[in-house]
Image (cartoon, rainbow, N blue to C red; front, side, top):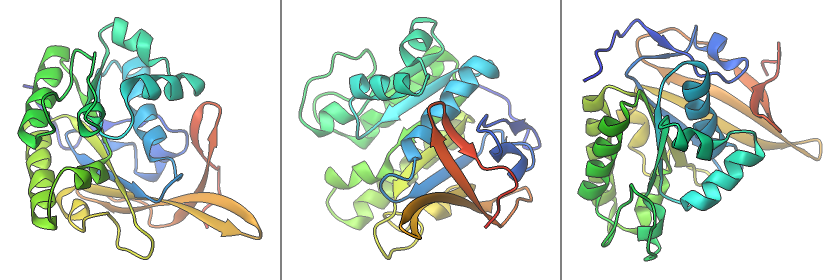
Length: 246
């Protein structure tokens, strides 16, 4: 098992973001990336894993609960994140948890089959992480759990199980959650409490234009800026605008 040093930083690799959290996420921490539709949550996950594998020699596991792997690979390639090449080099594993939720078959090596089950998903995450020797995990999105579970208590129990697994694996992980309109900082009202850090992504209308911004709402064990920063999604992913706190 990976031995972690809680003072050690894991560089995110998103231009402008590492300095805001004083050098990166703490190794072994679990970070919630929360926001509305179109704010860039999935791209954040892609960039986090791609940078880890290509820049920092840290293999990654992408757990997709909403997009099927084929769609995910296509979307990543448009941003220059060549997921297929990383998979061939044994630097990335994609776990297909989306096909099962849609009652569709999966041709992926790592997938939740025979009906969606949180224990089966946890087993696949554990297997993939150990097989790859992964240091980074992304789960996109926790909001997808709402389709397969009845009642808020059941959903929250599933999220707690996933969080406990991530803590046991000692990987640095990001998980995304959709924010409904006029709600709190997550879909089910529990994600922000089990995560060690929370980054909120915004997409607001300003003078007739939609503008993106983010704020680091929580980051246990380290200081961080509390200001709101604008960012853009370019042809190469997310870029924080220089010197531009709002």
